[in-house]
Amino acid sequence: MSAAIRPDPAPDAGFALLEVLVALAVLAVALSAIGSLFAANMQGTRKLEQHLALISIARAVEAGLPGPERAIDGPLTGAMQGHTWRVDYRPFRGVLRLQQSSRWTPEQVSITVVGKDGSMFRLETVRLVARVQR
Image 1 (spheres, helix red, strand yellow):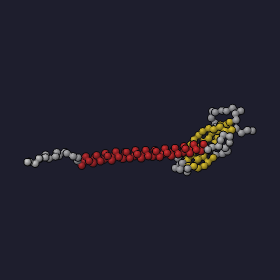
Image 2 (tube, rainbow, N blue to C red):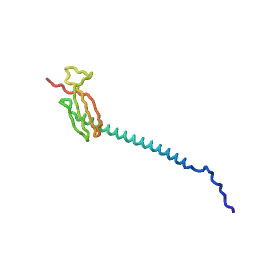
Image 3 (tube, helix red, strand yellow):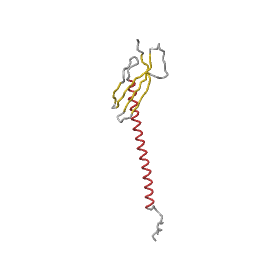
Image 4 (cartoon, rainbow, N blue to C red):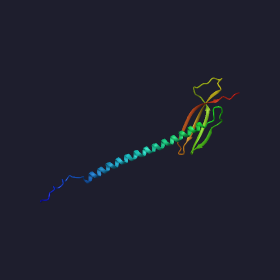
């Protein structure tokens, strides 16, 4: 029995050191691009969550405003969940015109919520309030 003789491997079999380094460099660039994309996505998600928190606080403040039968003198201020808010009232200067005989008058309401990080959300709306009887 004779032993099987294997031919010598070809000189170009396998990877050269330079090819391995180029492959690692391409992989590093791809991973850094994926990492920066992931970080940007996380930052966007965090900003969206903060914005939604400001909106929910503004809506809660709006829901807690006094009813239309009660007139408000001056701004209202407060804090909720570490965020500060302010409600300003002023006469409505839009195209909505009610008859002078109406018992309602429109007023513009501006609710401003400032977040812990300085971000701000403003909600502008109009409400009808009872006219003061003279």
